[in-house]
Structure formats: structure tokens, C-alpha cells
Length: 298
Ligand SMILES: [Zn+2]
Image (cartoon, rainbow, N blue to C red; front, side, top):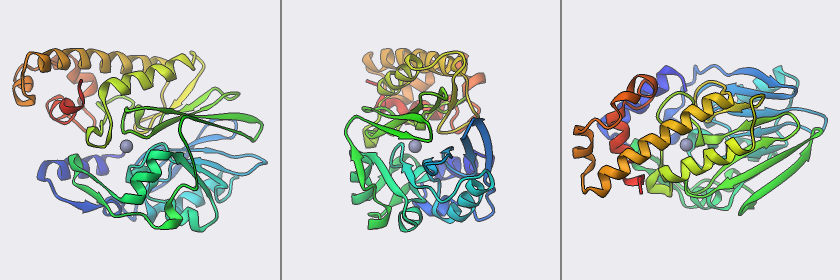
């Protein structure tokens, strides 16, 4: 996530302004492709990090940021030898990961997701924490292939495992494992280096985030490369540190909650004081993060 969108998110959260998903996109955003390993790339621009896998069977993409960026994203895919994606996975429904769906669906891309992602897109959604509102998506934007648990794609000389985890960042999260390449796209289970958004109002929970990260830890090793939903490319060491932070925060907040403290009272206790320097410099300060995730701590 770049600084501009961070500020925008913070602003919108602060003043409670309601705006549509695509109002978050900036026309001047630049898309950059970074090679992760072999035919796998990470594309950054605005919104969630995109995963890309190019090869003889066609281009496979994970998430698609915002609609106004689709042309630039496809140009970036072509610049590294790929083409308009043949396949797309949505790691979850949030607009900074699915905003390009309609453009890609119209271009012939096969869109896939967990069942719940399609449901949210069909019905439209509201993310109270950011005042982000999205009307029901058009037909072309909807995933045509949906799954309950797992999906395997056998493409480009690798096995791509798409794995659902329940009640984590939302209620429809998936992460993606490239088995041979030893690369993972974590979706928004991982914000590398800062406190993550947990969408409690749409089925997310901090405990589920930790369980999701544990699933990724179990499938990775020191040689793994992890594309986070937000933040820079991560190693397994980064992931372990993030997991430890989440577990510590969860334990402390749950204790305060069980003692009957409200979010406001919990913040007065400064329960995350020692974590602030390392984790509080992203989208949320510790205080803001506590008020955001408190309902999702149980
Ligand atoms: Zn998200």
C-alpha cells in the first residue's frame, strides 16, 4: 500500500466519509512488476498486491486492484511476457482486490473465488470501518467458478493450490500456494510489517487470522517467498514475527475484553505499547487498531 492510499484510508476512517470503491483509485497510480521467482511476479500499484504467474498455459492472476487501473495492470503483465489473464483468483471480496473484475470478465478472464466472495459481490457490501460502499456487482464481475474449500490448478508446469480459511480477514479468504516454486500469495491474511485490517462486520476474526497464518507457516520454509496482501514481499521470518504479534495482541485484548472492558477502556490501558514502534506505523496506530479489531476479538 502506498503512502497516498494509506492517508486516504486514514482520512476516510477518521471522518467517516462514505464513498464508492472506485473513488479510492487514482488515475496516476503506477503499476510495477517485481519478479518473485521464475514466472511468478508481484505487481504493486494501488490496493492489494497482485500475484502473477506467466507461462505456456496462459497468465494466471491473483487479485486485480481497482477498475481504473486494469489497462495499466495488463500493460505491466505484457511487459514481463504475459498477456490478458486467462485465470483470476479473488483472495476475498474487498474492492481493492476485486475492482478490476468487471473489466477482466468482459475480456474473457475466468474468475474464481470462494463461494462467499461471489455472494458479497452479488449483494453489494458496506465496510463500516472505511465507509466504503459497493453496490451489487455486474454479471461480468462475478466469479464463475466458486469453491468451498480448496482448488488446484495444474498450469505452467506447477501445481497451484488455492486454500480457503474460515473467518479470518473476512469470511471468504483464500491464500494461494505455488508448490514447485515455493511461493505463496497470502491475500489479506498478511499485512507485512503493520497492523492488519480485520473485517469483523463481514465475518472476519483475529483468532481466524492467526489460524490462517498458521496454515501458511505449516506450508512454507526458509526458502519460501510470500506475497502479502499489503506491504513488501515477505520471508517466512517476517511471517513468523507477524504471527507472534497477532497472537500477543489477541491474548492481551481478549483478557481485557473478558474482564469487561470496552474498547475505549482497553485503549487507556495501552496494552500494545511495546508493539507500537514495529507495527503501528502502517495504516493504523495501536489505539486505532484496537478500536477497529476489538469486536473481532473473541
Ligand atoms: Zn482486504
